[in-house]
Length: 316
Image 1 (cartoon, rainbow, N blue to C red):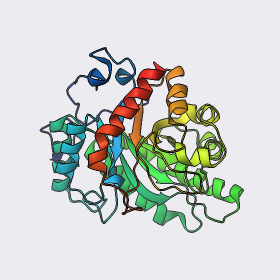
Image 2 (image 1 turned 90 degrees about the vertical axis):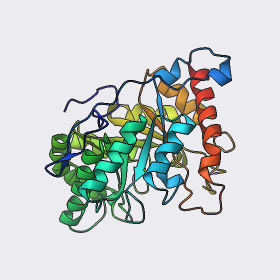
Image 3 (image 1 turned 30 degrees about the horizontal axis):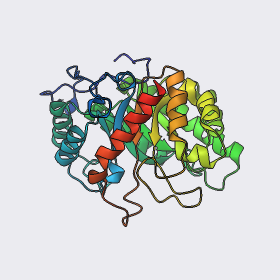
């Protein structure tokens, strides 16, 4: 398995191939035209859409069956999906081989990439290493079977001394990196909780120093941590897997909003990425699972896509 050095992870799964001897075989998707802004620009080609690709997280559609997720992505003009891996979701590490093949096949048949498996392992959490390592290995194998390029993990250092939390995360990620590389999956530490800034995540990843590990840039947490997008990008660029974008009302009110209605500097994020000629993924994260009172995501997805395309066009 060869890494795509432009940030798109490993090769995905090919339609029609399932599990062989209990494992999915590597599959390539057929090329497809990029999303364009025809409706927004009178048919003009959209330069940035050919460079950055759009996904959304299933955190915004909790419990939605995978075939419905795939139809939603394809019908809304998205290239891929980040699949939340949790026992309450259709996709989780306990999924049997045949079900994994069905998920991979449904996505591949529709031309939708499985961008990532979003797990909940906490690599900086105090305690014994082995339960965490076991949890992450299961996520890596799930990602391999689904054709996902990435696995998301949280820091989860809690109230531990920062130096101790760093050391714990470095030790565990270093132990997991060879397995990730062998499976063709990249293990991403999200800017979140105890390591919410680019500076904090980079402290860990610099010490791990392995190409099978990297950073998932959640722009809300770095912004709330006091970093501007240019600084976050400078710190995370050597490790960047993909970028989670969202919008919120304020630093204190993180209720999800559709893009452009809140305060997060999304235009600046896209501008910084564009100036760096970055051609990876923007993943829209809408935390419907944690805020059940907010409007449903499916009705909002076309507006989400259009807003992101306008930002990409403006940054081109």
